[in-house]
Amino acid sequence: MKKLYRVGLFMEKNIGFNRNVIEGIYAFSQRKKNWVFYDASPSVDLVETCKHWKLDAAVCHINTDAVAKAAEELNIPVVNTTDSLVGCKLPLVDVNHFKVGEMAGTYLKSLGVKSFGYLGHATLQYSKQRQSAFLEAVSDVSEAHVCHVGYTPTITTMEEARESRRTMRKWVESLPKPTAVFCSNDIPARDLADVCLELGIAVPKDISILGVDNDFVECRLSRPPLSSIDIPAARVGYTAAEMIDDMLNGKKLRYDGHYTPDPVRVVERESTTLNAVQDENVRKVLDYIDANISEVQKVEQLVALVPLSRRSLELRVQACLGRSLWDIVLEKRINYARVLLQQNELSLQQVSDACGFASSRRFYAIFRKYCGCNPTAFRKMKTLT
Image 1 (cartoon, one colour):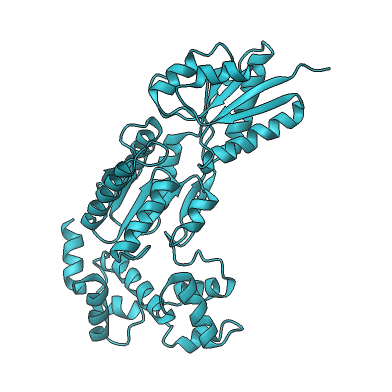
Image 2 (cartoon, one colour):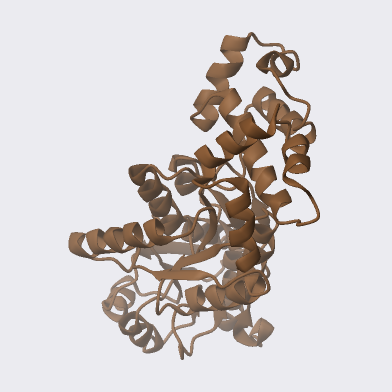
Protein backbone atom coordinates (compact mmCIF):
# COMPACT_ATOMS: atom_id res chain seq x y z
CA MET A 1 0.00 0.00 0.00
CA LYS A 2 1.32 3.44 -0.96
CA LYS A 3 2.23 5.90 1.77
CA LEU A 4 -0.54 8.48 2.28
CA TYR A 5 0.59 12.11 1.93
CA ARG A 6 -1.26 14.94 3.67
CA VAL A 7 -0.97 18.13 1.61
CA GLY A 8 -2.09 21.54 2.87
CA LEU A 9 -3.56 24.12 0.47
CA PHE A 10 -3.20 27.55 2.06
CA MET A 11 -4.87 30.03 -0.28
CA GLU A 12 -7.93 32.28 -0.42
CA LYS A 13 -10.52 30.33 -2.42
CA ASN A 14 -12.62 33.44 -3.15
CA ILE A 15 -9.93 34.46 -5.69
CA GLY A 16 -10.31 32.96 -9.16
CA PHE A 17 -6.56 32.50 -9.66
CA ASN A 18 -6.36 30.32 -6.55
CA ARG A 19 -9.37 28.24 -7.55
CA ASN A 20 -7.72 27.49 -10.90
CA VAL A 21 -4.40 26.70 -9.19
CA ILE A 22 -6.26 24.16 -7.06
CA GLU A 23 -7.69 22.61 -10.24
CA GLY A 24 -4.13 22.05 -11.46
CA ILE A 25 -3.04 20.55 -8.14
CA TYR A 26 -6.03 18.20 -8.21
CA ALA A 27 -5.23 17.15 -11.79
CA PHE A 28 -1.70 16.13 -10.75
CA SER A 29 -2.97 14.31 -7.66
CA GLN A 30 -5.15 12.09 -9.83
CA ARG A 31 -1.96 10.47 -11.08
CA LYS A 32 -0.88 9.68 -7.52
CA LYS A 33 -4.09 8.64 -5.78
CA ASN A 34 -2.33 8.88 -2.40
CA TRP A 35 -2.62 12.62 -1.69
CA VAL A 36 -5.16 13.86 0.86
CA PHE A 37 -5.87 17.61 1.00
CA TYR A 38 -6.44 19.98 3.90
CA ASP A 39 -7.26 23.60 3.11
CA ALA A 40 -7.33 26.91 4.95
CA SER A 41 -6.56 30.57 4.39
CA PRO A 42 -2.86 31.48 4.74
CA SER A 43 -2.18 32.93 8.19
CA VAL A 44 0.50 33.36 10.83
CA ASP A 45 -0.91 30.22 12.50
CA LEU A 46 0.53 28.16 9.67
CA VAL A 47 3.04 26.26 11.83
CA GLU A 48 0.48 25.19 14.43
CA THR A 49 -2.06 24.28 11.73
CA CYS A 50 0.46 22.05 9.96
CA LYS A 51 1.38 20.32 13.21
CA HIS A 52 -2.29 19.77 14.06
CA TRP A 53 -3.04 18.21 10.66
CA LYS A 54 0.34 16.37 10.57
CA LEU A 55 0.97 17.68 7.06
CA ASP A 56 3.68 16.25 4.82
CA ALA A 57 3.76 19.25 2.42
CA ALA A 58 1.99 22.52 1.63
CA VAL A 59 1.19 24.81 -1.30
CA CYS A 60 0.78 28.42 -0.16
CA HIS A 61 -0.39 31.71 -1.68
CA ILE A 62 1.88 33.98 0.36
CA ASN A 63 1.29 37.74 0.27
CA THR A 64 2.39 38.98 3.68
CA ASP A 65 5.80 38.94 5.39
CA ALA A 66 4.31 37.30 8.48
CA VAL A 67 2.90 34.36 6.52
CA ALA A 68 6.17 34.07 4.54
CA LYS A 69 8.13 33.84 7.80
CA ALA A 70 5.77 31.18 9.15
CA ALA A 71 5.93 29.18 5.89
CA GLU A 72 9.74 29.28 5.85
CA GLU A 73 9.78 27.84 9.38
CA LEU A 74 7.82 24.75 8.33
CA ASN A 75 9.92 21.61 8.36
CA ILE A 76 8.11 20.19 5.31
CA PRO A 77 8.21 20.82 1.52
CA VAL A 78 6.47 24.12 0.67
CA VAL A 79 5.83 25.79 -2.71
CA ASN A 80 4.67 29.39 -3.06
CA THR A 81 2.23 30.32 -5.88
CA THR A 82 2.45 34.12 -5.86
CA ASP A 83 5.41 36.43 -6.45
CA SER A 84 4.01 39.03 -4.03
CA LEU A 85 7.00 39.56 -1.74
CA VAL A 86 10.61 40.51 -2.33
CA GLY A 87 13.04 38.06 -0.75
CA CYS A 88 10.73 35.11 -0.12
CA LYS A 89 13.06 32.09 -0.18
CA LEU A 90 10.56 29.34 -1.00
CA PRO A 91 10.27 27.59 -4.39
CA LEU A 92 7.98 29.69 -6.59
CA VAL A 93 5.52 28.91 -9.38
CA ASP A 94 3.65 31.89 -10.82
CA VAL A 95 2.89 33.54 -14.16
CA ASN A 96 5.51 35.77 -15.85
CA HIS A 97 4.24 39.15 -14.66
CA PHE A 98 6.47 41.18 -16.97
CA LYS A 99 4.92 39.37 -19.93
CA VAL A 100 1.47 40.11 -18.51
CA GLY A 101 2.22 43.86 -18.45
CA GLU A 102 3.73 43.73 -21.92
CA MET A 103 0.68 41.92 -23.32
CA ALA A 104 -1.63 44.48 -21.70
CA GLY A 105 0.28 47.40 -23.24
CA THR A 106 0.33 45.88 -26.71
CA TYR A 107 -3.39 45.12 -26.60
CA LEU A 108 -4.56 48.47 -25.22
CA LYS A 109 -2.45 50.37 -27.75
CA SER A 110 -4.29 48.48 -30.49
CA LEU A 111 -7.54 50.17 -29.37
CA GLY A 112 -6.26 53.43 -30.86
CA VAL A 113 -6.36 55.53 -27.67
CA LYS A 114 -3.51 57.84 -26.70
CA SER A 115 -3.98 57.98 -22.92
CA PHE A 116 -3.30 55.07 -20.57
CA GLY A 117 -3.63 54.28 -16.89
CA TYR A 118 -2.47 51.60 -14.45
CA LEU A 119 -4.45 50.61 -11.37
CA GLY A 120 -2.79 48.25 -8.92
CA HIS A 121 -1.15 47.65 -5.55
CA ALA A 122 1.76 49.84 -4.48
CA THR A 123 3.91 47.21 -2.76
CA LEU A 124 3.01 43.70 -3.94
CA GLN A 125 5.86 42.50 -6.16
CA TYR A 126 3.74 41.08 -8.97
CA SER A 127 1.76 44.33 -9.28
CA LYS A 128 4.98 46.35 -9.50
CA GLN A 129 6.31 43.99 -12.19
CA ARG A 130 3.10 44.25 -14.24
CA GLN A 131 3.13 48.03 -13.86
CA SER A 132 6.76 48.34 -14.94
CA ALA A 133 6.32 46.25 -18.10
CA PHE A 134 3.03 47.98 -18.98
CA LEU A 135 4.49 51.48 -18.65
CA GLU A 136 7.41 50.44 -20.82
CA ALA A 137 5.06 49.01 -23.45
CA VAL A 138 3.06 52.25 -23.79
CA SER A 139 5.97 54.68 -23.30
CA ASP A 140 6.24 55.33 -27.04
CA VAL A 141 2.62 56.57 -27.10
CA SER A 142 2.23 58.63 -23.94
CA GLU A 143 2.96 58.81 -20.23
CA ALA A 144 0.55 56.60 -18.29
CA HIS A 145 -1.41 57.72 -15.22
CA VAL A 146 -0.90 55.50 -12.15
CA CYS A 147 -3.17 54.87 -9.16
CA HIS A 148 -2.34 52.56 -6.25
CA VAL A 149 -5.13 51.08 -4.11
CA GLY A 150 -5.63 48.16 -1.77
CA TYR A 151 -7.85 45.23 -2.73
CA THR A 152 -8.71 41.68 -1.65
CA PRO A 153 -7.05 39.90 0.09
CA THR A 154 -4.90 42.77 1.42
CA ILE A 155 -7.89 44.87 2.57
CA THR A 156 -8.92 43.78 6.06
CA THR A 157 -11.35 46.51 7.24
CA MET A 158 -14.36 48.36 5.83
CA GLU A 159 -12.56 51.68 6.27
CA GLU A 160 -9.71 50.44 4.09
CA ALA A 161 -12.26 49.42 1.46
CA ARG A 162 -13.96 52.83 1.57
CA GLU A 163 -10.64 54.66 1.33
CA SER A 164 -9.64 52.54 -1.66
CA ARG A 165 -12.92 53.44 -3.40
CA ARG A 166 -12.50 57.16 -2.61
CA THR A 167 -8.98 57.14 -4.05
CA MET A 168 -10.21 55.39 -7.19
CA ARG A 169 -13.07 57.88 -7.68
CA LYS A 170 -10.79 60.90 -7.52
CA TRP A 171 -8.31 59.28 -9.89
CA VAL A 172 -10.79 58.24 -12.56
CA GLU A 173 -12.45 61.68 -12.52
CA SER A 174 -9.05 63.27 -13.18
CA LEU A 175 -8.20 61.06 -16.18
CA PRO A 176 -8.41 62.49 -19.70
CA LYS A 177 -11.11 60.83 -21.77
CA PRO A 178 -10.76 58.42 -23.47
CA THR A 179 -8.19 56.48 -21.40
CA ALA A 180 -7.40 52.75 -21.50
CA VAL A 181 -6.74 51.41 -17.99
CA PHE A 182 -4.82 48.22 -17.19
CA CYS A 183 -5.68 46.81 -13.75
CA SER A 184 -3.33 44.43 -11.94
CA ASN A 185 -6.18 41.95 -11.33
CA ASP A 186 -9.86 41.42 -12.13
CA ILE A 187 -10.87 42.43 -8.58
CA PRO A 188 -9.72 46.08 -8.80
CA ALA A 189 -10.88 46.09 -12.45
CA ARG A 190 -14.42 45.26 -11.34
CA ASP A 191 -14.20 47.94 -8.64
CA LEU A 192 -13.13 50.44 -11.31
CA ALA A 193 -16.09 49.47 -13.51
CA ASP A 194 -18.40 50.04 -10.52
CA VAL A 195 -16.88 53.47 -9.89
CA CYS A 196 -17.34 54.45 -13.54
CA LEU A 197 -20.98 53.33 -13.34
CA GLU A 198 -21.53 55.42 -10.21
CA LEU A 199 -19.94 58.49 -11.82
CA GLY A 200 -21.76 58.12 -15.13
CA ILE A 201 -18.48 57.53 -17.01
CA ALA A 202 -19.07 55.37 -20.09
CA VAL A 203 -17.12 52.10 -20.44
CA PRO A 204 -15.48 51.54 -22.91
CA LYS A 205 -16.26 54.89 -24.62
CA ASP A 206 -14.50 57.06 -22.00
CA ILE A 207 -12.60 54.45 -19.96
CA SER A 208 -11.55 51.06 -21.33
CA ILE A 209 -10.77 48.49 -18.63
CA LEU A 210 -8.53 45.41 -18.84
CA GLY A 211 -8.02 43.05 -15.90
CA VAL A 212 -5.96 39.91 -15.26
CA ASP A 213 -6.93 36.33 -14.32
CA ASN A 214 -10.04 35.93 -16.52
CA ASP A 215 -11.96 35.14 -13.32
CA PHE A 216 -15.43 34.04 -14.47
CA VAL A 217 -17.15 35.50 -11.40
CA GLU A 218 -15.46 38.91 -11.43
CA CYS A 219 -15.60 39.32 -15.21
CA ARG A 220 -19.25 38.33 -15.59
CA LEU A 221 -20.64 40.20 -12.58
CA SER A 222 -18.96 43.42 -13.71
CA ARG A 223 -21.00 45.99 -15.64
CA PRO A 224 -19.99 45.90 -18.39
CA PRO A 225 -18.33 42.45 -18.43
CA LEU A 226 -14.56 42.71 -18.13
CA SER A 227 -11.92 42.02 -20.73
CA SER A 228 -9.11 40.15 -19.02
CA ILE A 229 -5.75 38.50 -19.60
CA ASP A 230 -6.06 34.74 -19.30
CA ILE A 231 -3.15 33.23 -17.38
CA PRO A 232 -2.19 29.54 -17.02
CA ALA A 233 -3.21 29.23 -13.36
CA ALA A 234 -4.04 25.52 -13.66
CA ARG A 235 -0.55 24.92 -15.07
CA VAL A 236 0.86 26.86 -12.11
CA GLY A 237 -0.98 24.49 -9.77
CA TYR A 238 0.07 21.38 -11.67
CA THR A 239 3.75 22.42 -11.66
CA ALA A 240 3.60 23.36 -7.97
CA ALA A 241 2.29 19.85 -7.27
CA GLU A 242 5.09 18.36 -9.38
CA MET A 243 7.64 20.26 -7.28
CA ILE A 244 6.01 19.03 -4.07
CA ASP A 245 6.22 15.49 -5.43
CA ASP A 246 9.91 15.98 -6.25
CA MET A 247 10.65 17.06 -2.68
CA LEU A 248 8.55 14.31 -1.10
CA ASN A 249 10.49 11.71 -3.09
CA GLY A 250 13.95 13.20 -2.65
CA LYS A 251 14.32 14.12 -6.34
CA LYS A 252 16.09 17.13 -7.83
CA LEU A 253 13.67 20.06 -7.79
CA ARG A 254 12.55 20.75 -11.35
CA TYR A 255 13.06 24.23 -12.89
CA ASP A 256 15.46 24.89 -10.01
CA GLY A 257 12.43 25.83 -7.93
CA HIS A 258 11.37 28.78 -10.07
CA TYR A 259 8.79 28.40 -12.87
CA THR A 260 7.04 31.35 -14.53
CA PRO A 261 4.97 30.49 -17.64
CA ASP A 262 3.82 33.26 -20.00
CA PRO A 263 0.23 34.56 -20.03
CA VAL A 264 -2.13 32.97 -22.57
CA ARG A 265 -4.15 35.69 -24.31
CA VAL A 266 -6.47 38.66 -23.91
CA VAL A 267 -10.12 37.59 -23.62
CA GLU A 268 -12.16 40.46 -25.03
CA ARG A 269 -15.44 41.53 -23.49
CA GLU A 270 -17.44 44.75 -23.46
CA SER A 271 -15.12 46.71 -21.13
CA THR A 272 -12.66 47.26 -24.00
CA THR A 273 -14.64 46.72 -27.18
CA LEU A 274 -18.32 47.13 -27.99
CA ASN A 275 -18.17 44.21 -30.41
CA ALA A 276 -17.23 41.61 -27.81
CA VAL A 277 -20.84 40.72 -27.00
CA GLN A 278 -22.20 37.21 -26.66
CA ASP A 279 -25.31 37.81 -28.80
CA GLU A 280 -24.39 36.60 -32.30
CA ASN A 281 -26.88 38.88 -34.08
CA VAL A 282 -25.76 41.98 -32.20
CA ARG A 283 -22.12 41.14 -32.87
CA LYS A 284 -22.86 40.72 -36.59
CA VAL A 285 -24.43 44.19 -36.72
CA LEU A 286 -21.54 45.79 -34.82
CA ASP A 287 -18.96 44.22 -37.12
CA TYR A 288 -20.91 45.44 -40.15
CA ILE A 289 -20.95 48.99 -38.79
CA ASP A 290 -17.17 48.93 -38.36
CA ALA A 291 -16.64 47.67 -41.91
CA ASN A 292 -19.14 50.07 -43.49
CA ILE A 293 -19.10 53.11 -41.20
CA SER A 294 -19.50 55.67 -44.01
CA GLU A 295 -22.37 53.81 -45.65
CA VAL A 296 -24.72 53.21 -42.71
CA GLN A 297 -27.42 55.88 -42.89
CA LYS A 298 -30.49 54.15 -41.44
CA VAL A 299 -31.22 51.61 -38.73
CA GLU A 300 -33.22 49.65 -41.29
CA GLN A 301 -29.97 48.79 -43.09
CA LEU A 302 -28.78 47.05 -39.94
CA VAL A 303 -32.07 45.33 -39.19
CA ALA A 304 -31.96 43.75 -42.67
CA LEU A 305 -28.75 41.91 -41.69
CA VAL A 306 -30.38 39.73 -39.02
CA PRO A 307 -33.56 37.61 -38.62
CA LEU A 308 -35.03 40.02 -36.07
CA SER A 309 -37.54 42.84 -36.02
CA ARG A 310 -36.26 46.34 -35.36
CA ARG A 311 -37.74 46.29 -31.85
CA SER A 312 -36.16 42.92 -31.02
CA LEU A 313 -32.76 44.06 -32.29
CA GLU A 314 -32.98 47.35 -30.39
CA LEU A 315 -33.89 45.51 -27.18
CA ARG A 316 -30.94 43.15 -27.56
CA VAL A 317 -28.52 46.02 -28.22
CA GLN A 318 -29.89 47.89 -25.20
CA ALA A 319 -29.48 44.78 -23.02
CA CYS A 320 -25.89 44.18 -24.20
CA LEU A 321 -24.56 47.73 -24.38
CA GLY A 322 -26.98 49.96 -22.48
CA ARG A 323 -27.77 52.32 -25.36
CA SER A 324 -29.66 52.46 -28.64
CA LEU A 325 -28.41 51.08 -31.94
CA TRP A 326 -28.13 54.54 -33.51
CA ASP A 327 -26.20 55.80 -30.49
CA ILE A 328 -23.72 52.99 -31.19
CA VAL A 329 -23.41 54.08 -34.82
CA LEU A 330 -22.68 57.67 -33.77
CA GLU A 331 -20.23 56.56 -31.10
CA LYS A 332 -18.30 54.44 -33.59
CA ARG A 333 -18.25 57.34 -36.07
CA ILE A 334 -16.83 59.70 -33.47
CA ASN A 335 -14.20 57.18 -32.37
CA TYR A 336 -13.14 56.76 -36.00
CA ALA A 337 -13.10 60.54 -36.44
CA ARG A 338 -10.76 60.90 -33.46
CA VAL A 339 -8.29 58.59 -35.17
CA LEU A 340 -8.55 60.34 -38.54
CA LEU A 341 -8.21 63.83 -37.05
CA GLN A 342 -4.73 62.92 -35.88
CA GLN A 343 -3.74 62.41 -39.50
CA ASN A 344 -3.15 66.01 -40.53
CA GLU A 345 -3.16 65.24 -44.24
CA LEU A 346 -6.96 64.80 -44.17
CA SER A 347 -9.22 67.87 -44.32
CA LEU A 348 -12.15 68.14 -41.94
CA GLN A 349 -14.54 67.58 -44.83
CA GLN A 350 -12.69 64.39 -45.78
CA VAL A 351 -12.92 63.17 -42.17
CA SER A 352 -16.63 63.96 -42.11
CA ASP A 353 -17.22 62.04 -45.35
CA ALA A 354 -15.11 59.06 -44.27
CA CYS A 355 -17.15 58.75 -41.07
CA GLY A 356 -20.48 58.87 -42.91
CA PHE A 357 -21.87 62.21 -41.71
CA ALA A 358 -24.44 63.80 -44.03
CA SER A 359 -22.80 67.21 -43.70
CA SER A 360 -19.85 68.91 -42.02
CA ARG A 361 -22.33 70.88 -39.90
CA ARG A 362 -23.79 67.62 -38.57
CA PHE A 363 -20.25 66.31 -38.00
CA TYR A 364 -19.34 69.38 -35.92
CA ALA A 365 -22.51 69.16 -33.81
CA ILE A 366 -22.20 65.46 -33.00
CA PHE A 367 -18.46 65.69 -32.35
CA ARG A 368 -18.96 68.54 -29.89
CA LYS A 369 -21.70 66.57 -28.10
CA TYR A 370 -19.46 63.53 -27.62
CA CYS A 371 -16.06 65.17 -27.12
CA GLY A 372 -16.85 68.56 -25.56
CA CYS A 373 -15.04 70.48 -28.31
CA ASN A 374 -15.23 70.86 -32.09
CA PRO A 375 -13.03 68.81 -34.48
CA THR A 376 -10.69 71.75 -35.15
CA ALA A 377 -9.94 72.26 -31.45
CA PHE A 378 -9.49 68.49 -30.96
CA ARG A 379 -6.94 68.35 -33.78
CA LYS A 380 -4.99 71.27 -32.31
CA MET A 381 -4.90 69.66 -28.86
CA LYS A 382 -3.61 66.37 -30.27
CA THR A 383 -0.98 68.20 -32.33
CA LEU A 384 0.29 69.96 -29.21
CA THR A 385 0.51 66.71 -27.23
